[in-house]
Image (cartoon, rainbow, N blue to C red):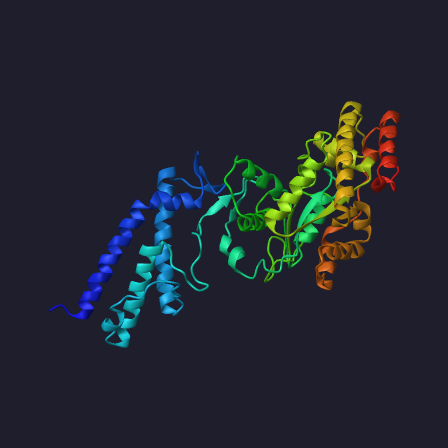
Length: 444
């Protein structure tokens, strides 16, 4: 007669065979849970992210699902060994007590229970042990920065203490070449702040709502923001990396937490500037973009606060003009001036559109916006960094304030003197200075 132990072993083998069969025929279903997978030469997109791969779409689909099945088995083994398997509303095996002849049989019974849960419910409920979705152990290419970064698992944000202390989501209202990159680098260096650089989360969320890219939840968005911040620091060409060619200052702040965070996150967001304000339609319905941001606030689940970076409009406009000509550094170094009235008129017009839009946002969002003047931030960083922290409702330690002040700030450049200004151009800018209160302090 077959012994009880032999019966158990046969039953285990039988259940494993069933599991493998179900895993094989359920591959397509499981892959759909991972999001849309689209072939794109040697780059594949999963959940809206580009994944480096030399394998075909079908091979990747098979590989991901096989890894998911194996990962579930690994977690079962891990949790059984740690006695962390937690059954929830799972019927007991009627003959379990009859088969428990000795303590040595207990792991077999638990393994059978775990396999039964896989078969009946599709996933095992584990206490702080089982991840809700598969972790991709590869790398991905962020489709904005085009840099390869390590992928951080969504469940770290969904289940852990990383996000349960978040206070606000940060968005920038600003203008190109107005000093927003410096502010973003300073904020991201804080131990409890994660701030990516022009990752454009509002744009991505808008596209996902319209169905032009795969849907994602807020935890996936938070993870991708964190990864983009890490990418910007650690990859060649990242604006906060040591290798980026900033002539007059650096956005790399050593010894702090750029691209990382310590223990938990209090503030998360992105430095977007004009990429954000351009989403306004520009028509008479000024509420359209405001309503979009309010809906985005509901999506992320936290209050959205804003930083409005402002620079002397003459310097701001001149710097944009020089960048258009790809000659800023050469012109400033040589001491020469550029005379391009055609480009100057175009840049002034673009700047005026942004001024008008942001004026509406300042009126609506009120004290949710902190206006930061580029020149004051550079000349007196300690005071303005503290104002930034007060606005975000977080603590700024002395070590943090001292290091960012020493690492980032130097004398502000006055690009206006590198461009020839005709009287008509000066008059137009002067009219904007008089019209918008946040520019009243400036002159040529």
